Image (cartoon, one colour):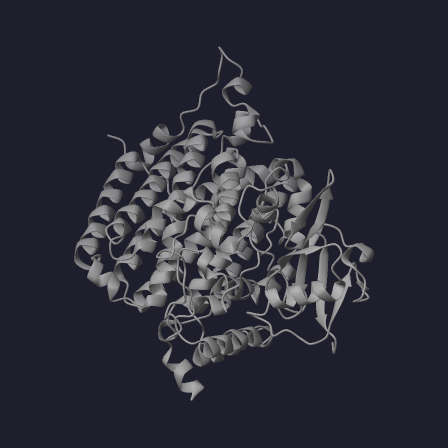
Length: 80
Length: 492
C-alpha cells in the first residue's frame, strides 16, 4: 500500500510529501526524502529518522514502524 | 448658509428610530455582526476624516488626473522594459495579488455600507467601496497595456481565477476577511489590522522602493491608492472601541487572529520584494527593519490607545520576523515554476547584506543558498530544472501556505485530528485559529489533499500546467536564467 508521509529534512526550509510503499524500509524513506530535498540540502550518507520523537530502526519497514498516512517524520544527519 | 462643519453631521448622521419594523430585522446579527447591540450603543460613532461626497469626488478627480499624467509620461512598455528584471518580478507579485483582492474589499465595504450599525459608518464604507473599485481598476488598466511586453503580467487579472497554490492561499484569506466577514469582523480585520496595521504602511515603503529603482509609474499608483486607504481605514478604530466596550474578549480574539493571518501573507509579498527582488543598490532597509520602524511601533501605539494587549503569540511573531519570509523564499525559488513571476538567486553581495541584516538566522539559511548555487555551477545556465524541486510540497490547513514555519533546524508544523482527518498546521498560532473555529476551516482541502483525492495531478509538471494554469512561457524562472556574472567569476 502506498503511504503519503510528511517529511522534514534537517536544514531544509519546507516540508515535503513522500509517497512510499508500506513495505519499504525506514532507511529507504529517509533516502527518498533526502533526495527530494537535495536541491536545497546535500544528502548525508547516514541519517536518523524520528517519528513521534522516537528514533526508528532503519531496517524496519514503514508498516512495522507504525507510520501511518499523513504522519510526520524528521530526518536528521547521523552526526547531530 | 451653514458652514461645512455645521451641516456635515446632518448629512452623515441620518439614523432614526424604527416604528414599523424591529431593529433586529433591519440589522440582523448574521449580516450586521456580533455582539448585536442596540443603535444607542453606536450613536457616538465617528471617524476623523469626515468627508462629504462632494469633497470625495473632487479629491478623487484630482488624483485620477495626476495618476494618468504619470501613466502617459512614464507608463509605457519601454519604460517598464528599462526596469531591473528583479524589480519587475516584485511588480508582478504585487500586481497579481492586489486588484482582485481590492475588488473583494468592495463587497466587504458595501456590506458595511448597508449593515454597519451607524449611518456615518455606512457613509464612510460606501466611499470605501468606491475607493476599492478604483484600486481594482487602476492596476488592471495600468498593467494591461504591458501584457504584450511581459506575458506574466496577464496574472494581474488571472491570478485569483486560478488554482495556483498562492491564489488558493490568497482566496482563503480574502474570502474570509473581505467577502464573508460581517461588518464588525470586517472592520477589525480589514480596516484596523490589515490596512492600518500593514498595507497602509506597506504602500509607503513600496512607493519609496519604487522611487529608488526608478519605477515612477508604480510609485505613483501605490501612493494614489495609499491616500484612499489612509482615509477609509479609519473605520476600524471606532468600531473596535465600541466592540471593546461591550465584548473585550472578542475584540482581542479578532485582533490576534487577523494580525497573524495578515502577517503571513504580508511577509511573503513584501518580504520577498524588500529582501530579494529590489536590487541591492536601491535597498534602504531590510524587511525586518521596515516592519520594526513602520509596523510594530504604530501597532503597539494603537493597542495601547485601545487598552488591548499584544497578541498572545508575540514572541513567536518576533521570531518569525527574522526568518519566515526567508524560509518561504528559498522554498519558492526551488519551486519557481509553480508561480507566475521570476525569482532571483541571491549572489555573494546579497548574501553578505542579508547576513548583516539577519545575524541570528541567516547562518541557518546560507547553506541552502550555497547548495543551490553549487547546483547552478554544476548544471550551468539555462538548466532550470536542475535547481528545481519535483516532489510535492506540504501546505497548512489554515493559512494554505507551505509548511515553512520555524527554522531549518526545527520546522514548527504540527497536526490536528478531527473526525478522523489529519490537518497539517504550520505553526502554533495557525493551529489555535483553526481549533477555535474548526467548522469554518475543516472542509477546505489544501493542494496535497486535492492531489490525494484525485482532484489535482501528483506530477509536478502536470500540476503546474493543468491545475495551476501556468505554461512554459509564463511560469517562474530564475530571473537571469542562471547567467549571473558573479556565478561565472566564482566558478573560475
